[in-house]
Amino acid sequence: TGGQAARMHQISSPGGQVYRAIRAIEWVRGHFREPLVIDTLARECGMSVSALHHHFKAVTAMSPLQFQKQMRLQEAKRLMVGEGLDAANAGFRVGYDDPSYFSREYRRFFGEPPRRHTTRVRSETAY
Picture 1 (tube, rainbow, N blue to C red):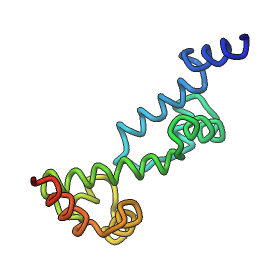
Picture 2 (picture 1 turned 60 degrees about the vertical axis):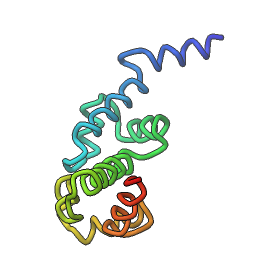
Picture 3 (picture 1 turned 120 degrees about the horizontal axis):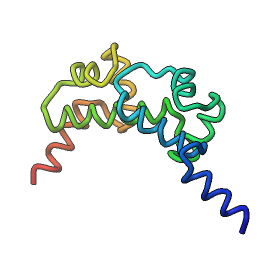
Picture 4 (picture 1 turned 90 degrees about the horizontal axis):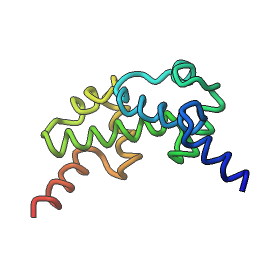
């Protein structure tokens, strides 16, 4: 139908909103350690802030800031489990300036404090 064709064009068109949202996702993936300024990201992707939020969430089911937080916390987990970094250093490496804030965010996301979580994950994967 005409509606489906228009939607496919929007998805595949380099100028389409979904394409721009994917560009925003890729930008956040490549720069997740840096502070995220939504106005700047929207401007870089050629969208309004509201369009960025709408299309980003349609593709990821998260806001840009939630997506960035998830990227940071997953990378911190990898650094602690895989490279043996402590929580403060892992948090700093992924963009958190405050170790206490990092630990709170980590606990909220993974359900337990960084040290306990990484110890458990290491023991589960050791076998």
